[in-house]
Length: 240
Image (cartoon, rainbow, N blue to C red; front, side):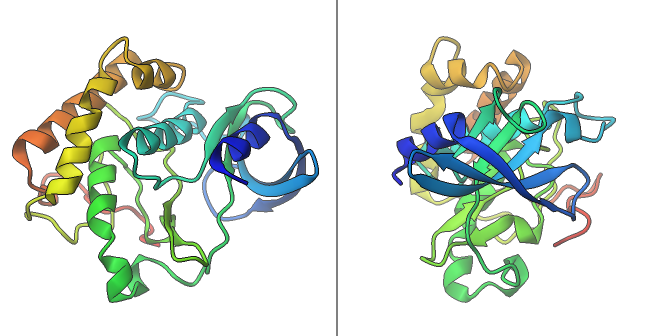
């Protein structure tokens, strides 16, 4: 399926529960999504399955998953699998629904090849933009075709600096010009009234979208990947 068809399938296809992912703090399910004569697998994260957190508003993590996809698309980076917020006819109520990416579960950040590691500069920029508080090694997937995908963005977009990631490979280095250019071109879309700003509003607060724009402006102005902070934990736990 092409991407528009996948998004339509995720929004309107018939969902059937196939299993539950047993690792993780929140309820996450594998579902079959049947759309016409086609079937795809998707990862379903219902709002009602989210464990309350002290630093993120309750029942907002699935919304943040969708916001990460929208920002990735707005940048033209295609890093996040197609993701929608499914409201109707979902087995356990409203939640995020993301295309499942076939991948080798034994392959992760800590055993990437040198060629795969070359793609991490964009990952680091993306996590800085969305303020990802939980970039574990297993959240970077390579499809059988060798395409990189990023998953699990529920703990993102906080207005306070929460960045926790295993990907500090380029800390202190200049951000590649093509990445800075992509971010700079996307900046107008983060302003009130712009199309991306409007599509983000159901999923993030206005303050969170403003903080996203501020982080983008800072990356463009400074043009350097920051060093890990020394006044707080900079890595997620567990690491994988």
